[in-house]
Image (tube, rainbow, N blue to C red; front, side, top):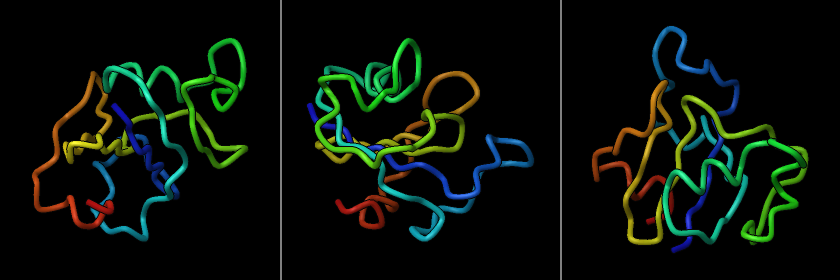
Length: 101
């Protein structure tokens, strides 16, 4: 499955709450092909090497930070997830159009 990764612009990393879901608050940084939302997160984090060097990362914006709290990932089936302090929170379907679905 393909996942589109959106990073928050001026992220709060969850401190004081998450940013409002307005497209201008996010930047599309990657398209990743993998089997799960957790793998999409792992593949867009700097662990041993820059994350954009992972072969599962199909497209990317170079120089991007790691995926973190407050970022959004959209699966090709339309499921939208918000990165939370622990795991992922599925986002209501009314935000799908904003992220290109």
